[in-house]
Amino acid sequence: MDSPRLSRRLLLSVSSALALASLTTGLANGEPAPAVAATPAAVPAAVPFSDDFDGPAGSAVDAAKWQIETGDNVNNHERQYYTAGNRNAALDGQGHLVITARRENPGNYQCWYGRCEYTSARLNTAGRFTRAYGHVETRLKVPRGQGMWPAFWMLGHDIGQVGWPGSGEIDVMENVGFEPSTVHGTLHGPGYSGSGGIGAAYTLPGGQAFADAFHTFAVDWAPDSVTWSVDGTVYQRRTPADLGGRTWVFNKPFFLILNLAVGGYWPGDPDGSTALPQQLVVDHVRISTSDSPVHRQT
Image 1 (cartoon, rainbow, N blue to C red):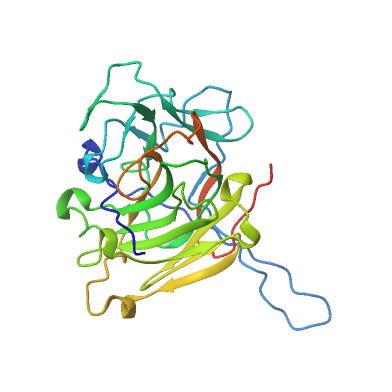
Image 2 (tube, rainbow, N blue to C red):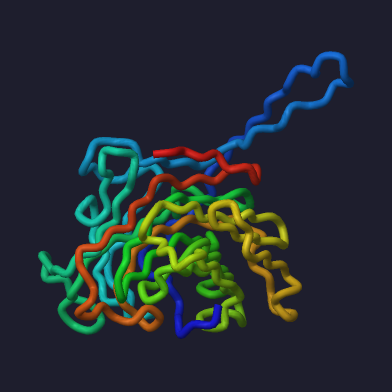
């Protein structure tokens, strides 16, 4: 992806709290079809991580699966302060996680530029769940407006030891408000990070906006291969051959991140056209061991 974008990471306590979760797999055997040679049934996807965000309206996310990051992010010159608890990240009681960006500062939060102007939320699974390989998917509806920057992405579990970009970063989906019809999928690693990341964009046909409806964003991740799709349509595949001899750092466990940033080098800051609050509404997040996702309709 060719964009004036720097690291999206936040150097918080998450960097030193990483652990590989135990994973489970499952197989099912089918009966032979009558009057023909016996054939094995299709193997269903084992789902080692799944969150459908079911729970009472206003409640916080499951702390056994997610931790909440707090603070600002000077790396990208983002404008928000990420708050704790359920203030900016809460369940809506209808099977969704809602991450809300607001123009406010109820706690007199201080950011890199002075008194913070916005609040939002950022969640990750570091120390709860990490995984190498599988079908990684989310179904969500992005916010709209200049300065909005929602993302679903992953960082290498060893970021606390090797730093960024040596840890690697897989951006499953990013959207910036000035491109309402387009999302980006990108790899970042040593020698190909920030605006030099390796990736591509996907644009909806007919001028549709991603904020108008839910869409499913996924990567199918295998040794030496990452493949991106939107609503089941594949739009890019990357392998070590795309790196021009630079190091492929994606054959190891990563953890998940969901966040809604406000402003920064890439999206630019909100302006008079930006209506706030804005919401990133997440229907589910899943990782399965098969490339056949399990869909849930709402």
